[in-house]
Length: 470
Image (cartoon, rainbow, N blue to C red; front, top):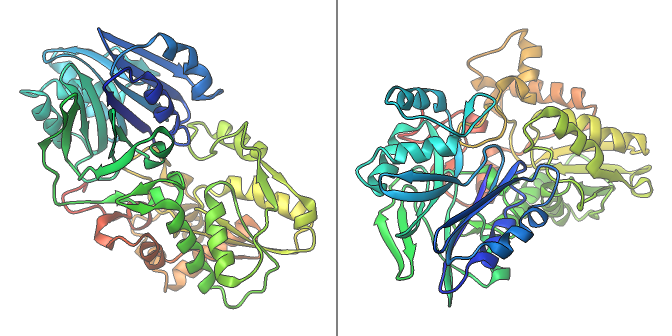
C-alpha cells in the first residue's frame, strides 16, 4: 500500500510536505517522492528500502521552494510522475492497484503513446494513470475515464498550475482526508499526519469524489458516488493507530477486536496476554482488558531498524525483517501459558519460524494464537499485498486436505462448517501452536462499526462491491 500527502499553503509548503509525507512511512517500503510547484516543478525520488524517508529528503527540502506540493511513500513504483500533458505540465502520485496494467498499456502503445518509467519490463502504474488521464477532454473528464478503464483501485493527488486535485477511488477502497489550518490546506491518506503539523480534519472524501484545492480554498469538481467499500484491513493491520477512516479510529477498533477474541475464549486458562508488535499490540491489549489477565511483552520489536515484514516485495527481505525485528524476553516467556494476538495470518511462515519458535525456545508452556481477522482466502485485488493465492496459509491447508486446489471454497469460509474446523486445525498443527482461533467475520465487522455493505471484505469472502470487479 502507498501513502500520499499534499499541501497548498499561503507561504512555502516544503516543511509541511516533508513531515506530512514522512508520517506515511509505515505504509510503503521501496520509494519516497515529493514534488513542489513554485516558479516551476521541482521533483525528487529516492529509494528508501534501506533507510528512512527523513534522512533521504532532508537536504533536498532545503532547496525546494513553492506553495504547493505532493508526496508519496510507495510500496512498488517510483513516484511522483511528471507529465508535460496537453492540459499543461502536472505531477501525480497514486495509491491503489491496477490489475489490467498490461492490457491498458498495450492499448496506449497501439495509439503511439510511449512509456519512459519501465522497471523489470513492467510499466510504472502511476505513469499509466497519468497517460490515461491525458486521454480525457480535460483533467476531470480524464480522471473519470481513468476510473472507468481500470480494474482495481486508484486514489490520487495531481498538482498543476490550477492547484492540487484530489480524487478518491470510485469505490472508496482507499481513503483521502482533507485537513485545514489557518495558512494551509492538506490532503492525506492517514489522518495521523495532521495533529503534529497543526491540521484539523474537515472532510473525508467520498468515493469517486474529485476536489480542487488552491489559494482560493476547496472546490468540489465532481461529487462522490453511492457505493462505498473501504478496505477493512486498514483498521485491522495497515493503518497507523492514531488514524481514523470514515471517522472511526484504528486504535479503538483494534481494542474491540481483541475484546471479541477474548469473549470466545472461555475454555482456556492463560498466564500472559501479548500482541505481536506493532499492529497486534492493541489487539492484545483489548484481549487483556476483556479477560482480566496481565498484558506483557514476551517479544519486543527493535523499532529503530526494522519496519513491517508484510509490505516488502521480496520473500527474502520479508523473512530477514521478521527474523531480526522481534527480540524475545526469556524472563517473561519461560513457564507461562501465553496468548499471542496477531493482526492476521497471511503466509504463516514468519509467524511459525520467527515468532512462535522463539517462544517455544525460551520455555513457553503453551502458545495460543489469536488472529484479529478471519483466514485470508483471496489475494487483494485493490491494493498491493499478497499477490498469489498459493501464498496464503488457508489455501495451503485446503490444498493439503483436499489434495488439490479448489475454485469453490465456500465450505471453508463458513465458520460453522466441519471443513472450516479441519482447515484451522491443519494450520494450528503446521504453526505448532497449542490452539488457534480466528476472529469471526461478524465480530470483526462489529468491531469496525460500519455497515457490512460499506466494507470491502474481498480477501476473506471473495465478494466484490456492487458495480466492482467481476
